[in-house]
Length: 117
Length: 416
Image (cartoon, one colour):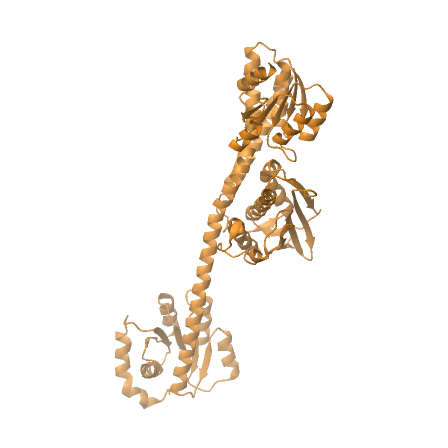
């Protein structure tokens, strides 16, 4: 599976990327929304995993922008704290999931599997 | 007035009065210091006749007088300038040099005509008045009333200043808690990121082992480094918080580089600014001279200004109600430079600005503002107090709808 990881800090992205690779995925990393959109446009991406809080383009806006490029791309958003308002914003379509930080890997992997189908 | 027979006949009466003077609602207490009993007696008589509301205590030497003065607060003192032993001028000097007795006004008296030199010496020693013979009782009584009036006014002012100082101290105390509260959101993010990283690493290894995936020493080493880095990051954060939350108002000031203060403030606010989508523009002049200050309290000022800017920027976005604002950049500019012997720090945002009316009220110590600017007012009052405590200036320029600039100017420190 081709996974795109987006977070502005390497501390989250680096170990996660290494693990997902070890589990047999191909992983691309982006440090902000713009970089991520470029990759979505030009490479194969089966799943987008992004932090919600990022400078300039946040996770929600990245999700909206990626919808314009690839309407069926499944998305997992990670957030330090999840507000109800945020839930509403990402609820539509069923193609987007919200996971709290710190990430529970079991839940993440289960979610990835679910979205793969 | 220090005439011979005149005194004798009243001596008895006055001595009695001196002895029995006690707490009976008198308005003011005077101390008379003279090594000549007749003179003491004469003044007691005068007070009795012209200032019946006053109570009098007497001392027969400067040494005794000093002792009494430290034990009892006097509203005024009449001291013979030319006594044997320690003279009145030296006594005056000592009284004014002691915090406990400095506030009691003093009239120096002489029984003889004196030179202007001596009078000047007495006044320079701190006496409020110097009266040389001859002077009549009516005038001396009036002069005593003058120093009592002045004392009353000065006491009132001192009380006011003390009250004000006490309020400012309270404000600074509570301010730390307020700022800590403001920091909480940023702290949460700042701790969550390293925790997420470390947790992913640990969970990852557990998962790889469970699945029988081979673990390489290189990967382990790399992850260990990453964990240590993050632990250090959290340790710094906690250390910072610990120092920050202490009461710093009594700490001595030392040479402080404002560039360092700015960087260390940004360390805690950076994540929060990012998460609010605020573009940070930093412009620090090189070779900034140090200022004399307390870096943690100055950091408190900056933190407050940055949090304000964040709120004002958020307000502008709210006012736009989700619509895109063309040509608007959600930006925070922080600049530091040296200018005319001062180190200037500016914090400028592109937010909704502060109304002219509220700008007037910005630095008042207690909230008086109406509307949404009310919350930031207390924080700014604290900033103002801290900057003033550093002999500096804090000012604000703002245009509604355009943005706000806060400027801190602190005197550069030359002692290095």
